[in-house]
Amino acid sequence: MSGVPSFNNITKSLVAASLLGATMITTQGCSEQPAVTQNAPAPAVSVYEVQVEEVGRYREFVARTEAYQEADIRARVSGELIERTFVEGAYVEEGDLLLKIDPSEYQASVNELQASLKSARASADRAERDLKRGKEIAGDGFISAADLDKLQTNFDQAIASAKAAEASLEKARLNLSYTEIHAPFSGRIGKVSFDVGNIVDPSSGSLAELTDIDPIYVNFQVEEADYISYQQKHIADGGDPSKAAIDIRLRLPNNTDYTQPGELDFADTKIDRSTGTVELRAKFNNPDSIVMPGLFVTLIVESKDKQQQALVPQAAVQVNQQGNFVLVVKEDNTVGQRLIQLGRRIDAMWVVTSGLEQGERVIVEGIQKVRSGITVQPVTKQVDRKTGTISDKA
Image (tube, rainbow, N blue to C red; front, top):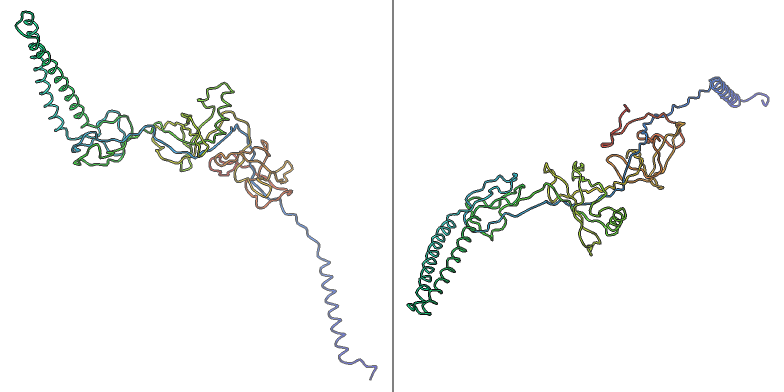
């Protein structure tokens, strides 16, 4: 039966034929479908047109505020505190009565010494009359020279006693005046340390503290090299070194800018050997008492000699191994990477000292979906300089 195919061979042939037919059908179906190619649209990005403005050389210093005037209110005599006329924390005027100590004892001393002075003056008048009569009769021999000397001595002693009584009375009156404590200058009075009814004396310490904070002082330190350079520049310019050609501003601890401008008020006469710095002091008007003594603040010093420099939003600035950079949209709407040099920060903006020109477009939104070289659809936005908020351009 060699000429008759076996059952296994027939089965294998049928399976092979079926697989071949299925393959041909699949291939033919794929070749009949047309190829479809779709180009993705260019991504939209928000851009900011670079602006330039005048910016001066700039430094920030950690500084400490200090009261313009301050005084501890103390007792200069002892006695019972019988009156307090101020409200703690209130503003008081120069000369206002603040505290009163019981004056009874001191008034009694004044009365007593007034009587003593009157008696001493009467004794001096009597001694003067006796001396005058003695001199009148001394020429006739009715009084000896020794008796005349005695009259002169009595008169001198009476005059001295009267002067001593006058001095004692003046001291008593002074002590009586100390029972009333008045404000030495206008300012705000702090918390009182002793209540009415307490016994106070010169050793009691501060009864309250009075501070004048308008204007307010701000102390800061400058490196010796910077201070010398500053002095040399102003001397070379023919200006008075004590009149700074700088703008001085203040940033408060809550990161807000103080509205009042400052001026350089004092520079120390020596260099601190331990730190190599010079102590400087600025003065600011403080009409609303916003700035309190003892605050740590940021003192901002900017030269009045300014240059045109570009500003970009902080949201546009990125950092890589090469440094700071921004993504710019070119005229053909392609993206390019631009390395930049940053200067100072002004609110939500960075000053760019090199790398950008006015009018160039930097990407502020959509940075994560673009890269250098691709084409984008730029949408011009505006940026709030204070907050950095991005919004549609008006």
